[in-house]
Length: 152
Length: 84
Image 1 (cartoon, rainbow over the protein chains, first blue to last red):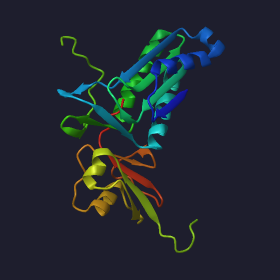
Image 2: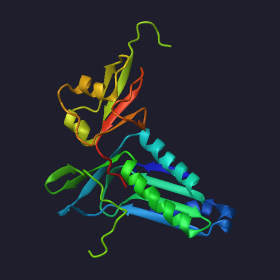
Image 3: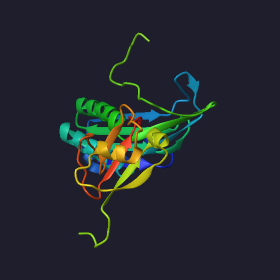
């Protein structure tokens, strides 16, 4: 289980690769890896967004993410969980969050990855402040992730 | 055990838009037995109402407004979270 808060840009694919390699012989019993990478968009609420600052609550954030990862390890049959979250100034295209789960079977990997991401979005103490051509503004709410209108 | 003469206090923290709205990020507040997360807000911010939907935590754990504080606790107030 690994949780990290990054003040600098990170490469989510290199993180997964390094973590996968570090599993060593344990890889032989792992049949599934599910991952989610969240990145910064260059638009929000109808406006172009130039950059964003991610604030967090040092101490509480680390503790909260570690608890989410430990709860996932206890709830699902997982071999490993990796959570990485960015803080500080981010630019469009930069990775903000990486959630990856390793399991013997895909159901546990898929479900835990999705649930971890939703729990993180709804409870981990991070806040986004966007910069647009008109100035800065706080993002007030995250969009719901558990329901998708496929007609759109 | 604290040294004689050392005042009992709690640390009060504000984050993100809520910190901007109250005009500060951190303040020390004298501790009084029985004080709650809600009463500390009033002690520190006077008549200014806590924003609807504000979240609160004591010592890095989410809590409720009626939770009673202990000496040396850290209490935090912040808006709905928007990470990920």
